[in-house]
Image (spheres, one colour):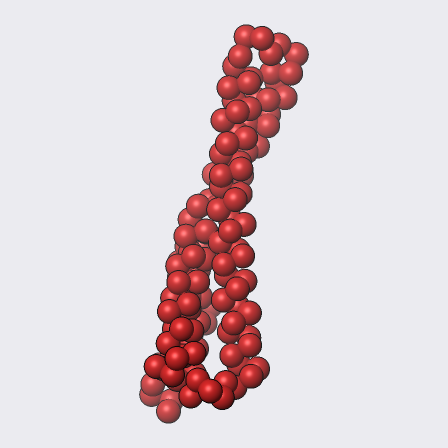
Length: 134
């Protein structure tokens, strides 16, 4: 099993696994950057020494917290890292001959479902019972 990967199928899954980690990192960075900049801008707007720039700091703070509120980057990051973990475990099992390609594809479906749940939408992929199709 592990010695002869179906090149295209496994390469696509490996690429998706890397992409999910990249999206996790971007959403997590968005959360922390907007949060930190928002707090600093809010404090700067409220500081007595900052007079003419205070409105700009207030606007920047509002934008940062609006991005956090509307996009919910922490929830999205959690969805992607959950999907990455699911697929990572299945990928490790597949690479060591402990599961077949169908189980690996099932892990992709589970990862997509985790991402969809974090996004607050129903999964768009139909639930496939890969074991019954063998």
